[in-house]
Image 1 (tube, rainbow, N blue to C red):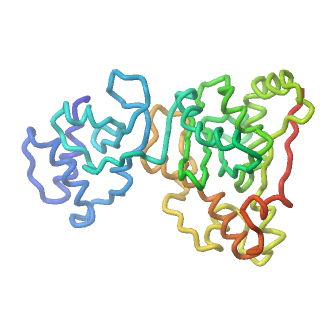
Image 2 (cartoon, rainbow, N blue to C red):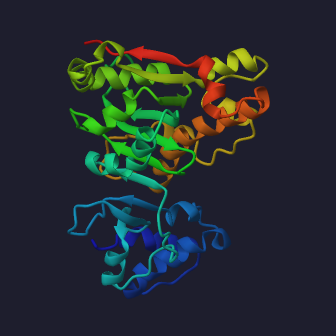
Length: 319
């Protein structure tokens, strides 16, 4: 791993009256951060130890694997890299199967969704997916919106969330497109219509080509339910219909919904644990809000799919 930036650790130690020999700088950095609440250093300890399946910043293997965040190097590293460096990972507990994948490898992301596709192939069951996208914000008013840089999909039964990084990608993996346009897949979220429109626009060739090749191309569409629109009908008394407002209305706790995170540059090389959590949370919250609405407004509905059905909209793909 690359050498520690000593001045940052020195500053931390100075601020907390800790004297640290240079040879112990690396080890002390983990110790100070791990004990942040007791020494007054602000740090999200749970996020620092976040385990995700992603690309290791150093490992020669190009295959995404289980990694943890190193708060010193500000990169994700696999267990092997931590062990070879002789340094303890920030969180010694390595989850057997992390539920969050964050990868630029679209093929890997598609394979991680295989369980969802198998369920679709086994029958006519509807698959509800929490959905969101992110792109790098513009800092000058009037600039053309940047391309989609992150696609977020989450599923309730499996508990999996897949964050596919699309920065500088000009194509979308065929299996991901197939999943999004499957007739039994319903995307759930807030502001979904505009997000679907942007995703299709930015990757128009992939969707248009897919629609043109399908025998049933005239029926090719992305199916979704915008929970903001549903809420306006069912709970007009809510104090706003944004994701944040709807979560507050339904007592869904948001841990990483800040102005700073909403302005993240989603095209940058490495996303921090807080940014990964924010992105995963946005997709997961679509499912949580829909479930709360179902239980509150239509408890007689046999499933979430049955509750959502009257609110489903089809975004037809042009050939």
